[in-house]
Length: 130
Image 1: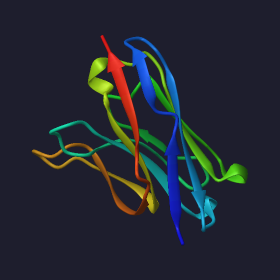
Image 2 (image 1 turned 90 degrees about the vertical axis):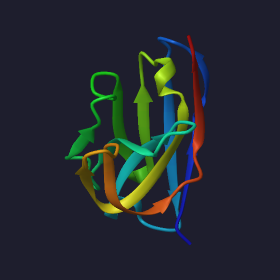
Image 3 (image 1 turned 60 degrees about the vertical axis):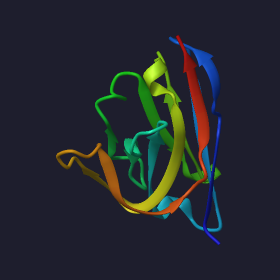
Image 4 (image 1 turned 180 degrees about the horizontal axis):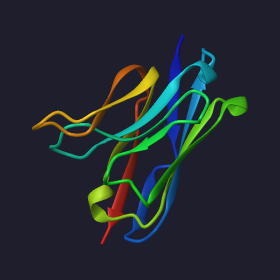
């Protein structure tokens, strides 16, 4: 059974940092691209960052560029999202998901997104106070 479990969320003040982890079990993670997504209350889920199976291709949403860094350790079946200089608008439930590739798409009227993800974790909550 394919399973992704996120951890590392919490509450920090604006300007602080968090590192999220996404651990996979039940499948070989190094065959899959992994994306991080987030969903704030009352808003649509949006793509934050995505990394290819071998780590050579990385993409960031504009909101994450310069502040967030995605990485992976396939030997540990884990993908990380290092988040620095956090802002209150980063408050959201953060999810990781696995798919064959990072298909970054921006459709008018919809948030930035990575389509084609097949397996999802249950999320970890990030709360940033002013």
